[in-house]
Length: 82
Image (cartoon, rainbow, N blue to C red; front, side):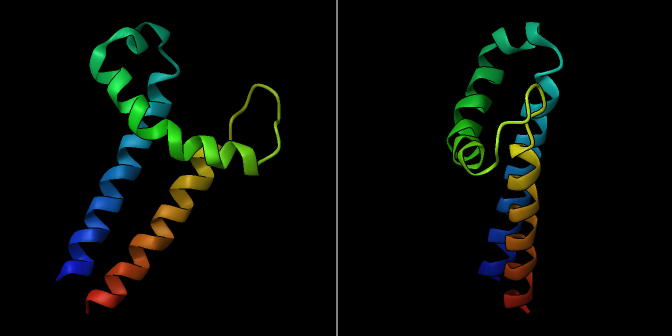
């Protein structure tokens, strides 16, 4: 049961990162407090991923790496739950 709950938390964090990525397309949204709070929750993990992935210019692939790794983790947690 705990593995399932943790997998859902990981899924939720993946959605939060996706929300952060989508708000980057709308710079005016980044001024809102809720969006800045989401950014404070995402940036520590994304910052680590940015150090791993080489800079490609304007495109930031760190959210892709983080979301893929989070989904692998969530899948492993679900398997442990059953």
